[in-house]
Length: 319
Image (spheres, rainbow, N blue to C red):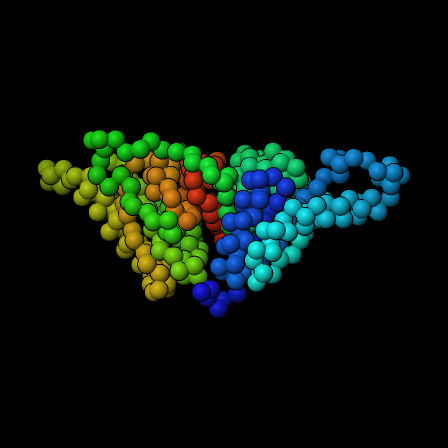
């Protein structure tokens, strides 16, 4: 059951495409579980629409007429999805402007943007690198990128015979996976994930990747003894548990498992998130996720993961 705290509004971008409709399905289901209000948004650009007499004459009423038509179409496109959740509070918002500008203007630290990884129409060119990617860079609040329905993008190769032990933990379908590297940004991502897990009654799996260069000091070689991959993973897990225990203690009802996993950050996160409810990342990183900046690991995960990816901006982030 949802916690009594006020739940963040979910802002769901919808352009009429199948990808946007799947993002709407995911967003509405999440809002229903959280008891959160929803705003369904469509942007329109006047230059992309047929000219009307009033436009040619320069009357402002033309924009109002177009907005009314877009709103009617938005309601028609989404009515069946919304009526499937009768307990939800849902509003429709139609605004003129570039889609990314419209969505980011609605974002804030207590509002979550939900976008599909592909789109068309009001969100023409909605690809990572376009509108969804722009939202990841510019939003003041968290952005949930939802992959296309039925997509199974095997982004990392399957484990091969002879690979190091503990290449990736087993993740259940209800789990929220969090990438954590010890930075303040990953703490913020973990905090958001723990809040969601509490309200969704979901377990959390916290992942830290490691390589020989990033393993804890003394965990690889000590007085002539070379540790096994399993031993180093255990040392990374222990360091991770110590680093996050204060945050985890704030959510005593949430089941949390920590795993140190050998490999590069993108490979580890994609493998670990396969089949998960959600993957949660900060928009900046270091250490085990060195180089975790938008345009790098977080963008690649948002583009290639099989599950929805929530990217949490640093507090005070603004474009």
